[in-house]
Amino acid sequence: MTRYKVGYIIGSLAKDSINRRLAMALVKLAPERLEFSEISFKDLPLYSYDYDDNYPEVARQFKQAIERSDAILFVTPEYNRSIPGALKNAIDWATRPYGSNSFTHKPSAVIGTSPGAIGTALAQEDLRAILNYCNSPQMTAPEAYIQFKPDLVTGNGDITVASTKEFLRTFMLEFDAFIERVLSVPPRES
Ligand code: FNR
Image (cartoon, rainbow, N blue to C red; front, side):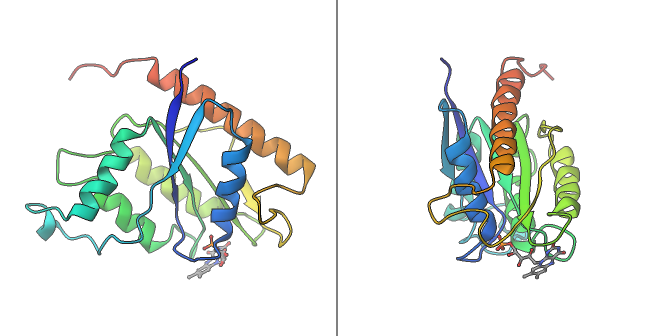
């Protein structure tokens, strides 16, 4: 059985992030052959192309963590109807210096949770547009807009609502199948 390394990126820097709780649940619900590790961006400075000639070690490590992953799972909040600025900053770091975009051909999926009724839908739309530009093949279905309620995820990362739990299990099964599909087709030589 082929195993896949999935790096997950949580869009929030908050220590009690509800998206971190969702990520914990997703890891538990995923097929066993997926191996997860968090790719943190909390120590990245604000990006400027002035760094391109001398990329800081923290940014090199961030890029390497993406490149060593077979796939990337984004679990993001919505801030002011888009993705958090810190997440956009991290993506900018990963795509540079010019010609070394770490997301190229890297399969990805997007999910998020918010107390609001549309459950990060607009942030996800923006993130999808960014990932399109970054040449990351994305899982387009199922979409997952999770409205967060205080007791939805236990401290151990267990989902308390059976229908949501099954939906999230399906989401991760689909992601697993998507990763396999993408990685079984070699990219065209350019
Ligand atoms: C929010 N929140 C929010 N929620 C939403 O559904 N749509 C939005 O546009 C916003 N905008 C927004 C901006 C800022 C700056 C903050 C701090 C918050 C509320 C947000 O969903 C809530 O704080 C979640 O707890 C954020 O997820 P994390 O950071 O806890 O994972």
